[in-house]
Length: 201
Image (cartoon, rainbow, N blue to C red):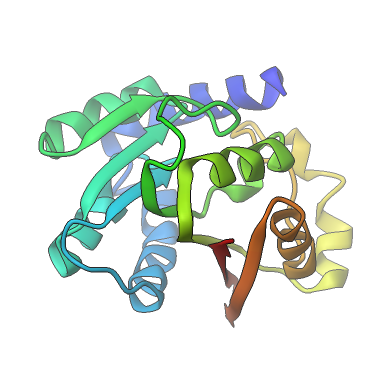
């Protein structure tokens, strides 16, 4: 777990200052735009973006809905840049397994193009359940590959220098969160992107 986290931390610290113009920054913009179409929120909705990077998704949500934004990311440099860009929001350096906010603090959690980096998705599901209010929503947008492609790629994914762990089938994501007290609301697959929506029950 530490190895994956360290690789992610080092990789995104190096990317942080030019993330928006990087290949990855441009690649993940499609995930953010699709999430913006999926999400419905009201002014003041407390949203925590896990693996928030430089805060771009939270900014987009704030502009559209007037949400109150919070973010965590394992990269200290990403968090430093997010704080500079969006001083009205609250950002903390943290991984996905132990998030430094009180239980039932949030109306919504988002994960954008980062779930395949999480070393312990069960620990994250437990944290998500702890952090969300009853009835709160969780949105996970991640890379989608058909079964055969995942079967071919997954043995090599942990070799990534960026800390990638595994590409998940939709049913794997759904099963993980249903076992942690979530109700699966819907699944939307658009090309190489899957968005799974859950509600805390």
